[in-house]
Amino acid sequence: MKIGYARVSTANQDLEGQIKTLEKEGCDKIYSEKFTGTKADRPKFQEVLSILQEGNTLVVTKLDRFARSTTDAIETVKRLFQKGVKVHVLNMGLVEDTPTGRLIFNIMSSFAEFERDMIVERTQEGKAIAKQREDFREGRPNKYSKKQLEHALKLLETHSYKEVENMTGISKSTLIRAKKKATK
Figure 1: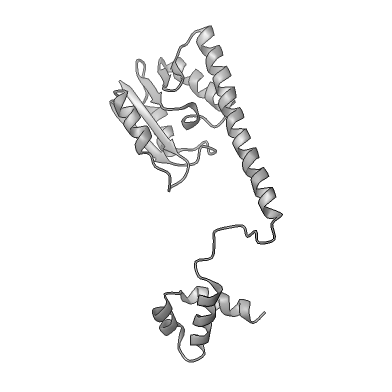
Figure 2: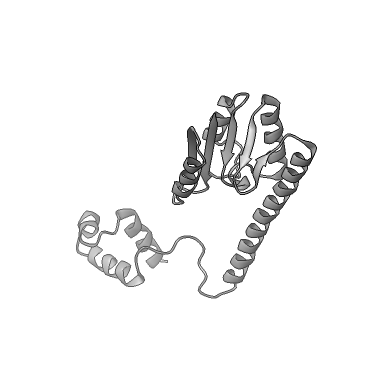
């Protein structure tokens, strides 16, 4: 039996491409989750590992969907090989339980970890450069402009929070924060 596993790191990423690829590969069952790969306790992945039996094949589209680091990948593959489970990483091929197969897998795992580390490093460098800009603001952008908030605060002088919220769509908590900020 071929069992597929698909994973994306955040809720706003799409699993569809991985799932379609796993379906084309002929997986009998596909498990998927939206869960960061930096955490070891990925519920669906743990479920997949627990149901795999001798003769099964675990299929993933890429190595980084399956393991957090080289060490994690090697340990997971070792455990699967001990259970008699084959591992097929689609962008690498079937991982064989032979000295050569394990060597190639270890090298590819190291490259995958290196690539992930480089992405993190570039992201941090970009963030450091952005922080040097005068207009840099970390976090998500403001939902309302300064002008919208000023208008809502002006309305608060003659209306209740509920009325201003209904007129502007700006929540009471946002109005309270804006009012505190304006009085500083």
